[in-house]
Image 1 (cartoon, rainbow, N blue to C red):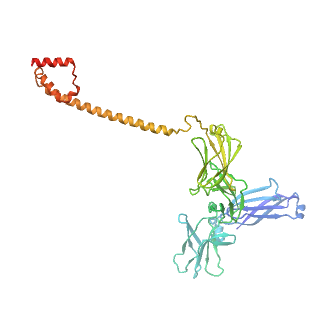
Image 2 (cartoon, rainbow, N blue to C red):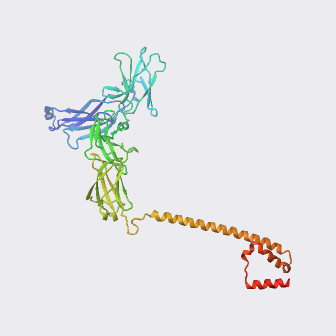
Length: 464
C-alpha cells in the first residue's frame, strides 16, 4: 500500500520545492523533497499548482503523522495531520494484500507470553515454516528457533513464545520450498510502551544505558523526578536515537534520577533506581540542632545554606554559604552550619560533586528553641520514670483498699454471730459471762480499758 498526498500551493521564485515527511511509532521517519526547476519557477511564478505524491509506503493499520512544508521552510507554511491506514477488515485489502490473506491466524496469550498460530492454507505435500522475528526494513531477524509444521500433521498450529510485545515483532510463515513467498504479519505496531524497558546499570563503572529493541525515532533525556510526578530535565543530557545505544557514564544511583523517553509529543518516565536494592544519601536533624548527612557509599557533597521565614510553605531564598562535605561509606557527618541557624528556619541545597550526573535536592528545617536548662535533657528521661512511679502508687493503693475491705467484712460477720447467741439468754444475768468469754475472741482488739469501764466491772462482780 502507498499513501497519496495532494496539496495546492502558489509558486514563487524563492520556493525551491516541497518537503513531505511521515513518522510512525517504532519506525524511521520518511522524508521526501519534491524540487522545482529554475525554469518552472520562473514560468509558473504566481500560479496555483496542484501537487500529488503517492510514493510513500504504508502498512496495515499504521498510524502515521504527515507533515508538508515548503522548501526552504517559511514560518506559517506547513501543514500536519495524523492518518490511520485501514486494516484487514477492509474487503479490498482482504484479497489483495499478503498480510490480509488469511493464511495465518493468531491468538495472543499475554499471561504466558505466547502466540498460538493456525495455518489455514498449506501447500499440499510440503512442510510449513513459522517463526517470530523483529522486522528491520525488508529483513526480519529471528527472536527464537524456527518451528516446522509437518505436512502429515492433522492440526496445523503451533505456539511460539516471545519476551516482549514490541512494535517490530512479526509472525512470518512460508512453505518449505525454494524461493517460497513469505507471509509476514506484524500485529503489534501500537505496543510502543514496551520499547522503554531494558535499562541497565553497571554499579562498578556507574554507567546507565539503554538500547532500542526496534528501530525508533525518540529523544532520551535524564531527569529528576519531583514530588508530584513531574520530571525536570537535567541540562546537557538529551540524545536523539534510532538504533544506537544510549549510555550515561558516572551516574548517581538516586531513586529520583530517571530517564525520559519522548516520541510524537508523548513522554514516558522510567526510574531504574526506584527499587529497594538502591539506597540514597539522607539528611537528618539531631535533637541538639546539628544536621547530619549520611550515605550508604563514599561521596563528596556540595551543601549550600540560606535562611527563610517559614518552611511551610518553603520560601524562595538565595543560597549563599557553601560547604563541601566528604562522607565515608555507611557513615554520618555533621554539616558545619553557623550557630545562628539553629534558632531560625533554614534550607539546605545538596548535590553530589564526585559524579557527573546527579540530583539536586533542597531540605528545609524548622528552628529549635533551646535553653541552658533543658539543652541536654531528653524528655523521655523524665516521662518514662514518672509514669512507672505513678503506676506503682496506683497499684499499691488498690491492693491496700482490697485488703481493708476484706478484713472489715470478716470482722462484722464474726460480731453478728456472737450477738445472736447472747439474745437467747437473760442479759442481766449473763452479761458478765459474755464479757469474760470475749477476752478470747477477736473483739479483744477493740476493748477500751477506761476508768468508767473498770468501775462498772467491779459493780457487776459485787452484785453477783
